[in-house]
Amino acid sequence: MQFLAILNRDGGTLRTTDLDALSDFLVRTMERAGHGVDIEIVRGREIVKALERATARQDVDVVLAGGGDGTISAAAAALMNGNKALAVLPAGTMNLFARGLGVPLTLEEAIEGHALGHMKAVDIATANGRPFVHQFSIGLHARMVQLRSRFEYGSRIGKIWASVRAAVAVLRHPPAIDIALDIGEAEIRTTTTGLGISNNLFGQGHLPYADTPDGGVLGIYVAGTANRLELAWLFLAMTLGRWQETEIVEIHECEKATLKIRSPTNRHRCVIDGELAALEKETVLEIHPRALKVLVPDPHAAVA
Image (cartoon, rainbow, N blue to C red; front, side, top):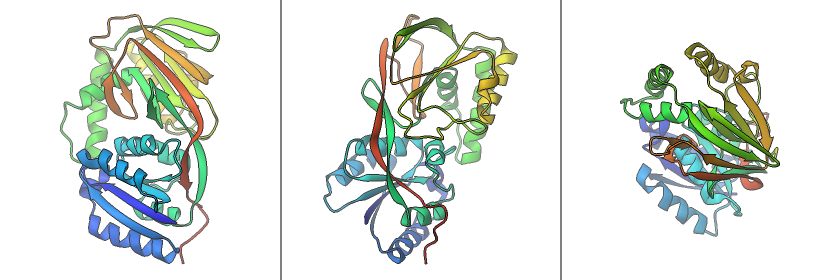
């Protein structure tokens, strides 16, 4: 196979990685496995154009995207419903989509896994047409990301610490959003502190990512109003994969949902795959079964 690696030098852990050494390792590993590889190292602002060039190339079978959540989400959006496969080089903070695909979390092990990987079709979701591979959310998570953006951090640990500080700040003044959510034949009308809609249902006992990336459903997680202690437990339960044990979260699944904001929207935002975005008065969310080709590593294979 012919790989094209697009590495975001501004994204995630790649900011502090020796990209020359990583590129050498990438070339050696792919060539030993019988593949060809071209490498583009770009700035964050150049990612979209680099992906557009990649999708136009007829000689490329796999786009290996390296960077944080924003980079991987942009790559998936560019490759959706196309002939090329996405290979994820996990350089983000949590790497949740990579975890769901079974991609090793160190860069070198991920490269070795992809060198002997196989193609698989997985699902991708959209929010008003914008693709996402992990989650669309409003309320608690969106407010935390908004507050975190005000803090300065230059490393993965720094980002985690900034997230903790932002979470504490959110718990002091939790949001409350009046919504109407149509899920198939049912409609939920409630005031929520947080709503997450995921690309497939999250698994249990681990960080929030889908164990089955081709399950064909949206996961709907609606948190009701709660006191600070209950919300603090919710944050912890989400980290531990135990949100099913919380009494304030309703869990549903569907193929299509329509979210209507009944509260004034001027102070609310949404988060799509970790990136802040404007929250529209109405958002249509859909699952697109097996619309994204990915390269899945073989955990038992080793490059000779």
